[in-house]
Amino acid sequence: MVKCIDHLWIPMSDGAKLGARLWLPESDSGEKIPAILEYIPYRKDDYSALRDSTTIAWFANHGYACLRVDMRGSGSSDGIMLDEYTDQEIEDGVDVINWIADQS
Image (tube, rainbow, N blue to C red):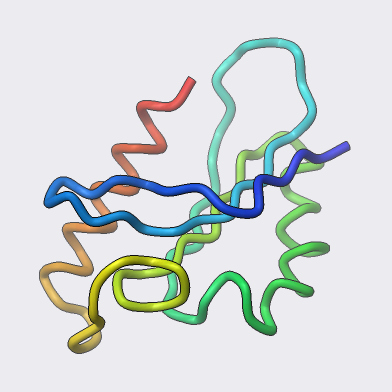
């Protein structure tokens, strides 16, 4: 069984927020679990949502926390996407990874 949180906010160090969808395995162990991050500009709520509901959920069903994060300026995330592969995009990715590592 998989638990899906359709929308949550991940705070960035500059105050912006990135929108994410999170799939979690149903578990009562309380132990930390590995995470898989998909961090792309293709909007978690568009056509990919149907694919994610099966593909990404499969990984959650096998013990992984899975996140689909809208990059800054895309989908439900704050900001403006100015270009590809910017320093801001990299910094946001680091903030997302740090956020994941801080979760219980």
